[in-house]
Image 1: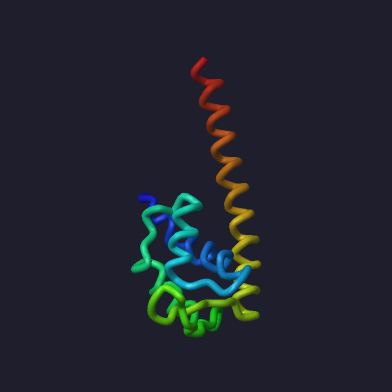
Image 2: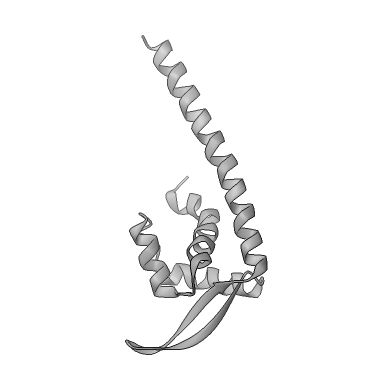
Length: 115
């Protein structure tokens, strides 16, 4: 499985987490994702996700003046978006625990059997 395939379900949650704190525009989200180690994620990847999340009622957007050119579309979470983020975080915590358990268990068994 490629990293891109693994990322598909995770990006929504990461975007919701980024938007949770304050209104954020698309390019800023791309920069934040890059700062967090998601360098391969482009604006062309996140805008369709944001549009879908807006259709689903998870985020709202508003265009605001920018000091650096044309108006920017700023996104913020709706109540439904906050709920979805909390559900994502709970799912992520369970998944992270399961993956870590499997890796630890198999690494320990593998090293015991090879010695």
